[in-house]
Image 1 (cartoon, rainbow, N blue to C red):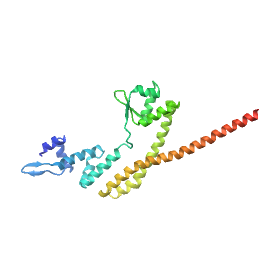
Image 2 (cartoon, rainbow, N blue to C red):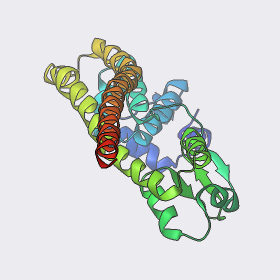
Image 3 (cartoon, rainbow, N blue to C red):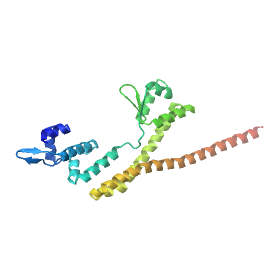
Length: 245
């Protein structure tokens, strides 16, 4: 195909295609006479470049990746896509503001703002609410059924968010220090890109499982300590009652 046909096929301008060639992002066309002809390889390169740009790589970084060969380019594209993927596969849900008010109570904009800052919900332009984690909304419903209002529930959520931020940073730092730093020091070997992707993918359930396991241990210890305090208070009251008789 000619450069104009390639532009139509990919939705790019002729000028941008030529700029990509100048930057080394596209291989040169096959020249016949005075006309350059492009093929499917050029289409794939343009699509791959777009994908990597969407994943946050600048054009110079993409050029260096493409120079190492198509295999490495595909691998880094997959890796960056994995980095940007949501940690969990839970799909958000859309609810009406009235439905949310039925759970959290009416007329408190600050309460909604706090929930948005926590990343629990997001207000859409049409006024409806995107619930980022439906499981958290179900937890709020269960807490309301137990008689726990939205204010104490949000306060607990804010505390949990701070602890969760620390846990997330710990695992990211673990990956960065123990796996990524040696890989980077080695010059990003082409054959190790897949290993990095596999490690990152395996780290996701490991992180979630480890945090849950530690939470269960901590929860057991906290309940045990609170039970001891409750029993001691009850014993003191019983003793005081006998002495007053």
